[in-house]
Amino acid sequence: MPHIKVKPFETSIVDEAVTKSDLLTFRAKALNRGDELWGVVLEGREFLLQVKYYDDEVLIKYDKVTRPLKVNLLKEALGRVAKELGLEVIASNITQHKETRFASAYEKQIEDFENIAFPFEKVCVEVGFGSGRHLLYQANKHPDTLYIGLEIHTPSAQQVLKQIDLQGLKNIWVVNYDARLFLEMLPSNLLERIYVHFPVPWDKKPHRRVISPQFLAESMRVLSKGRELELRTDSDNYFAYALETFFGVPKTEVHVRKNADLEVTSKYEARWKRMQKDIYDVYVTALEVSEPKQEVGDFNFNIVKYREGIETVLPKKALVEKEYFVHIERLYTIEEKRLLIKCSFGSFDRPEHKYILLEAEGCRYFASRPVKTSVNHKAHQTIMELLSNVECH
Image (cartoon, rainbow, N blue to C red):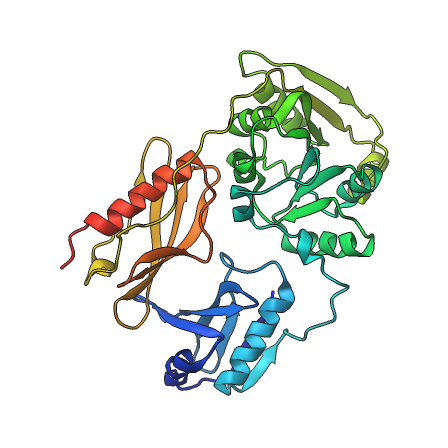
């Protein structure tokens, strides 16, 4: 990912630039560490740059939690920061190659789904679309259906956005986010189909698998009655695990096929077939009309504000409750009476990773709010209590 290496510089130039720049918004210094985070805003997007100081160089790169999907936006930010501060660049990989067009109108943020209109009567979701071959094929074949593709691998998401533009498609949305959280944003009884093709088996870390009792429950809620969740896998272990999960509920309808040919085949599937690996298809049908989605409270911090000394008393260990956890991972100070808090929270198998900007005037998530799930909201309320009630010295 984009980064630059520059010669050491006098850090006061950063503080001065923040007061004048329309790009740099703050400089946050880690407590008890030498690294920093610089806030930037570009093309209406807020994100962070991570800065690490070494004896003979300074590394400036993207921050994983807040990075935008568009790589050229990161590259532009790095280049402009270096220019504005007058830094001497030793090495970089921020050359902005002309992108083969980027269908950003079809890139959706997770927060967009808090209140979004679906422009098609039929909607399908593909979880982990990889190269996008199946997603693009379905969208071409069914122009009357909206296909929402979920993919956490950023380069794959970028490539599909390019293909959407090149192929002139109007019925794909790309979401660079965890599908396990995404489904909780959708209305009940919305979807025609959910595709989960060749998910990572995670044999050594089964808690990271997409298929789980919680994912199954959410899938059945968002699918229309009679519609299906479709799993396709080449893993014997995953197949057995999925069957155990699907039959672990009181009432279910499951259909299984082995080594069936689909109309479109990925290059990996073609390789597995040449190796004579078995491929399993498992279809789970939604049997009932689900109740409307429960509304979740807001994620505002209301009257929470910075208080003198709060950075010294926030808990260093994770707070673990029955349904969720909250972990204050790292603290960064921003001049006087401002604090940037890096934290993880939410459910144990699909946690959120966010920054919180705590100031004398108020408090907010930087640069986006958590997904509006009931578990995340419970964790949010705990965070509010921590920031409001701890005794400062």
